[in-house]
Amino acid sequence: MQSTRPFPKEKVLESGLNVLREGYMYAPNRHRVYKADAFETRLLGKKAIVIGGEEAAKLFYDEDKMKREGAVPEPAKATLLGRGGVQQLDDEKHRNRKQLFMRLLSKDRVDIWAKHFEKQLLLAIQDWLSKDSINLYEESQKILTKATCEWAGVPLSEKDSDKRTKQLVSTFETPMTVSHRHVEGRIGRHKLESWMKTLIQQVRDGELDVKEDTALYQTAWYRELDGELLDLKTAAVEMLNFIRPHVALSVYFAFTALTLHQFPEEREKLNGSNPYHLHMFIQEIRRYYPFFPFNGAITRKDFVWEGYSFEADTMVVMDFYGTNHDNRIWDNPSVFNPSRFSDWHTSPTDQVQMKLLAQGGGDYNTGHRCPGEWNTVRAMEIVTDYLVNKLTYTVPEQDLAYSYVKVPTIPKSGMVLTDIDYIG
Image (cartoon, rainbow, N blue to C red; front, top):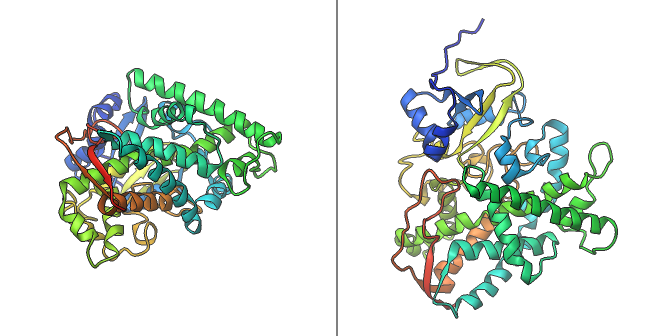
């Protein structure tokens, strides 16, 4: 019999309040104190094992040992993810549903997304030129909502654009809040799903004509393994799984502008002789700054890992932020250093699969890694190019600090820019 050791154990009846108080640092703090890659606690009234590090990521994305059904807590389903989406499926049903996303988010289709995004960015810049100042985080949300809806085949009138943007933002800003904002997120999710259900029904009834290569068309006519169309609610959830993550890129855009301001030497490197530096710069932003702190799964069976005994049907939480700052993986992880990616030439896969967990880990086609990473990287490339080479602007005095408790976090000011001029 394989010998085992006990998990370090957080002696609390419930850790939920600690998670809310500490945010991104909850898991890294305890891994540091316990000097272990795994510890036991209680979350939402149940036993949970919190893990972190590269080897832990390999475990977390091992589908022989982990499943996703039942792992998403109610607050996240009510706001961020909805119910019945691809993130909550397992095995053949997950792989089949995942192909809906892979068809539209594959690397060879990223140029389609980029054209829609850059078009809306240029239209926004025309408006910025007449303004005294802009809030880049908020402006990015509007740009991304318009670009993503256009890319996805979703009709969006100008008068409805701000309303839908606010609803989309509420779904990813509120899962870990306990204030009225969480209620806003639930209401936003409900209204967005109602909107999507109406559009999908219109496509099926022939009342709304959309191109076959769009997310709206593909989702409306997607068939499950049994040959049946998705029910309207589930189809609406999957449509929002195309749109919402793209709008959440506004977080990365704010941090891109912050980085260029706080590390001005990066501007020189981005204009230098190494064309690969842009890619390294973007990967380091995705590693360095907080995005979403962790994810959950459920053990399928009893097993032993690293001397720890896991029981079937136990919640397992994977620490994304701590892994992205693990000094066993990253040299001086608290230092912003794009050159650490100088030999990672096949982003965002291969070498980075279990190390850079900005948008999950593992394989796109068979696992739960986010298939939208190619669109993420391309959009960040475009924004960086504009901020460095095509726009001039001033960063006025403002509060650029960001909280490690608020999830997702951004610079407190949202990155205010003034004196904007287009030189592209």
